[in-house]
Image 1 (cartoon, rainbow, N blue to C red):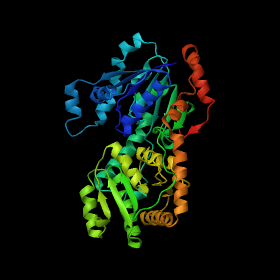
Image 2 (cartoon, rainbow, N blue to C red):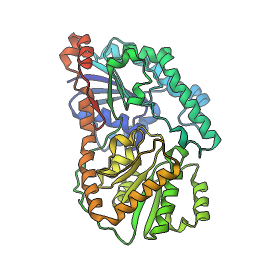
Image 3 (tube, rainbow, N blue to C red):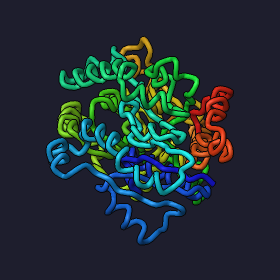
Image 4 (cartoon, rainbow, N blue to C red):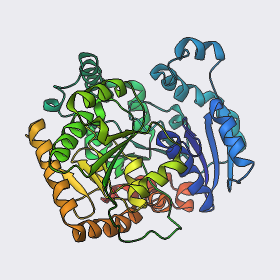
Length: 431
């Protein structure tokens, strides 16, 4: 059994995204028998404590920390729930907050879990305790030839993000974190490239997302009802490839009026998309569902026949795993995290390199049309989705991350951890 201190800025039950990563990794470690202490934001306390009233978290102690309220008020304000500067400072000042607990508990290691961005250093790495950094992400970029449809503000955001990625190798605090880490876990090779080469011997690859084991039995076949139901789940923002989604659906509906599109989510593009759908004459085939809770989302996974997620930049894709876990094939672009989850045996994966937007749309619509016309191939993809998602169970992910850590090595021979990492050349995209 290890005593582990986890840094998880985002850590809440039933929230998805970053809070889900923090919550699941901590809870999985607890169920595996390790003694876990989690430092998270005070803002998360209410949701965590309410959850624990009905369901206990095994072997976990939650510690809550925030910067003074006046700093929060200045940096975050009312409309900005995720201030980059505030998150950055939080990961620095937990060094001082953790001093007391570290003096009382003899931790075997410290693990930075969230935010899962490579851009945030963590000063807990300074303590003379083996430090695990990640899984972290950030190397994913929107292909330049697919940024043309972005509004100017989004183009500027992506350009600034590109610049911030270049700064990572020169950041003193990030280099301090890399230097003091015994293990750096990255989402993909693109993120690894952002880390100075002298630290690459510490790096392993593993996706920063997972899924719970499905206890209920999912039917291995589906019978299409009157309509073939396609759904999109996510924020309505430019990087989600909504232009590709709409153009693809327009081509599909011209050839087959028995197709429907269900859009689940909200965002700044909603009104623009509705207006565009009205102009194109396809709004009558679209159902705008809005944001729903996770329990209701499972209902929609079961009622739909295909999930389309044409993200132009995505390090993970929780909804992809959740859909597959409910027997729903997924169509994605060969970009980022989704491309590590879906292949053409269990879903649809469209290459984008050197292809125009129109070519991508043609390829995607053709493959979906072929799937609709071939029920046996569809059923095969359903079955293989259910099989492949098993590779992404949280227990498998956490076991992969921690398999190099043996308690005696950590207590008595810290350098042996580094040597064990250098002997490991395994990449894990499905853990």
